Image (cartoon, rainbow, N blue to C red; front, side, top):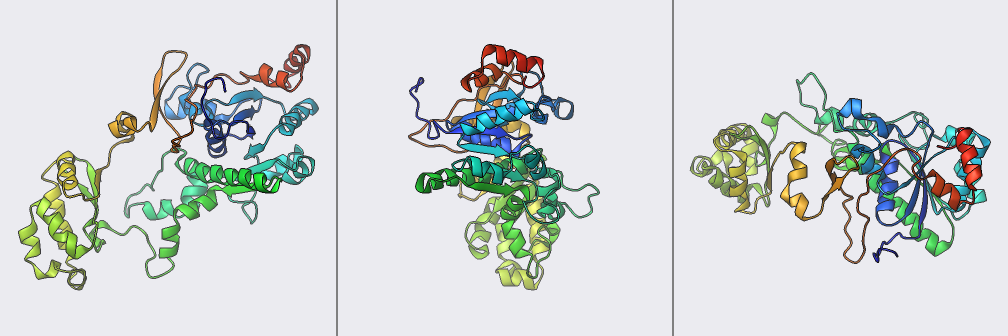
Length: 410
């Protein structure tokens, strides 16, 4: 290795024919830990490159941080797969690959001769990783799906996390479900790599936004099959006020969560809040049973709300830290990149773009003591590695020039 670093996936070759977020993120995780990833874009480019009008973040060749999150360190080539020459180039890339990552829908892959059955026959050691919105079977198998639709809506979260009476439903952050799902996809691909080492044959790896949503909301999916039919009741109807959200004097929300039992933690929490004498002397609040029998949880919550409203969130956090109570402050996302806890643990990394812009970027949340991962390298323009990739495949300079002139590659 030129840089004397140890990457656990060094030597693994990946062809990434995927767009936007989830599947490219899985390929990015492979790349981060040393895999050689070739990102194949259309001649128009991945839509993730062009988000500036929507998110007010730069989307230029010399500064495109949103695209970098999913595509740092990959080699980029743009290929017109509608041409015979483009299809031939794609097959040459796959012949040298260990893993093929794609989220192109099944009909499109079949038209291109890139469906699993075709490639498995030609390339039996290839690991074929296919990502979908709803899964490969059923009435929705061919439907397009984004995380804002499949993951959040179909998985149950949007409906149950919305606050009753609010006219607009819960609106999740862009690509949140995609990123969560990508970690599962990455794990499944690694399982296939281990399996191939044992048995000598590739396999088809599949996951979907829908399967990930059900898994992530698994506690809720099970819980609502019994008496409880809605995950988030009205705050005044939460039957254990020692768990939940409270609004503080600095207009920030905090969350508290009891550690042991209601009976043990009630005096500890109310002592910090300064209402211990008032609460613990009242028999209605003594046990979980008396709390429910008298519906006294409503009154206890009101007492706790009044107490929390008297001090800022930072003061409450310090007080609850002193008794080792799970507690934290709801911070806006714009503060996360400046959080000392994130910085000292290397959960974020500052990247300088060619135009001089500095951006604090999130990094994959996997850390191995004896192995390295690549530092984030800003992505550039479409087709920035086309000449290098085609040369490695055996194309001459003259052929590459003609392919560009004929709009086969960019």
